Amino acid sequence: MAFLKQSLLLLCVSTVLLGKMPEEELIMNVLKLLQANEKALKVFDHHPSHLLEKYAFEHRVQECTDAHLIYGETFETLPSTCKNLPRFSTEYEQFQKDEKVIGAFYWRKGRPQLRFNEKRCKDFNITLPQELAQYAY
Image 1: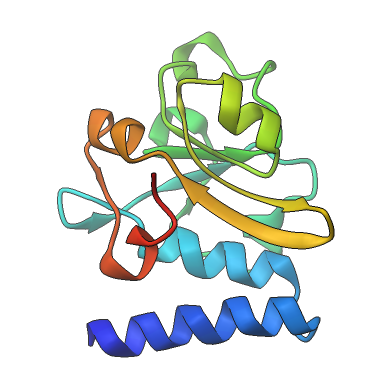
Image 2 (image 1 turned 60 degrees about the vertical axis):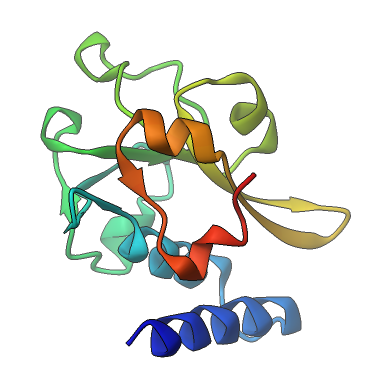
């Protein structure tokens, strides 16, 4: 099963690199693999494009207070009740400066980049599966 997931993720990344799959689909595949306490994470979409709604992401929640993870670009406008939740960003700068951003998918020099901060994931009790471990530092 792990080999199948790893192969699927590799195929998705390769397809994005070749321009055949929208980056949104790759992000959805990554979010589906993230777990906390061996359970899929409930994700709140704080991104203006409503990505999770567009792709019928089954773990999407309507309110950030019901979420385990916040997805978005920037997080300055999060309600105060959700400020302590972990985040997954689409901006490298957010990933670098915000201690609550556990991972990011962004573009650098025309190439897609997927990164995770291993310490932050551990701090939030989020497990990176083997398929994503290679993107952690």
